[in-house]
Amino acid sequence: MHWKFASVVLLFACLGLAASPAVAAEDDGVLRIGVFPRRDPALTERLFTPLAHHLAARLQRKVLLESAPDFAAFWSSVAAQRFDLVHFNQYHYLRSHRDHGYRVILRNEEFGESTIAGVLLVRRDSGIERLEDVRGRKIVFGGGRMAMISHIVPVYLLRQAGLREGDYSHQFALTPPKAALAVYYHQAAVAGTGHRILSLPVVRKAIDVEQLRIIARSESLAHLPWAVSPRVSPALARRIRDLMAGLKNSEDGRAVLASARVTGFVPAQDSDYDPHRRIVREVFDEQY
Image 1: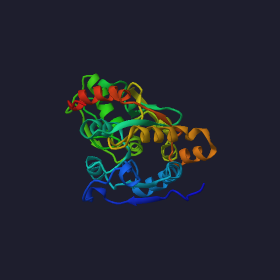
Image 2: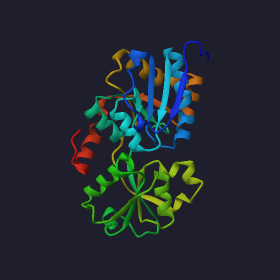
Image 3: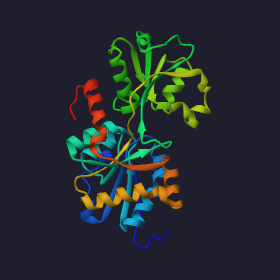
Image 4: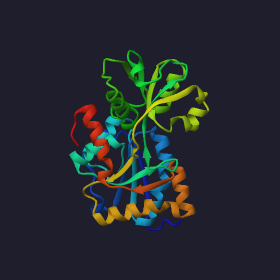
């Protein structure tokens, strides 16, 4: 791959300290990619640098790959519209679309699926057979309050079963795998997480997953989105969408996907996230 016309700059710092929004991609020829802190910044840099290189070469423009050490810093940069292309969780997307005009163009495909479900997970020997049995027990959610699949969706499942906050105690783990491990080691009775959790190598290597089982699963929901700033032209948005969706079609592209730990990027539209809006309205009483 030749880099005569393109370069990549990587910035992994506390972007919440940025003094002002970045200039739009069309204004200065730079495409700024923001990645939400699903993982630590060093790992995020390693996973998404090949994608940044690929887009830089194909678009023949500088690409700036940025992340943040925590969600507060990340959200500050989103609100400042610092990013041109941004990788969100689903709840972040709903907020950013309403409040800042970001529009979705793609969603992740992971393990061959472009949808994901939220689940509630227990030990097989817990005595919990159905959601009603969770009453009075401790739940650990695999992420913070804004984690769509591992917090908001599991709470929605509990609400559907007639359980409200106060009917159970809860805390948050840093990640979905840590929530599953907490249940395995009897630190909580129930974990809120995603439906693929027991397939993840990091979990399978750490515990005997046969000792855990899913007691409730949500409908299938659109996976993690990629969205563009309102300052990005429709033509550039389509070009980015087509380049990322087309990564499956070449050996080099599949290597970019493998680095990002996805099996593909699938074209998406805002209405794909209407089910998420319904769930958030039920859980948080927020309108998106």
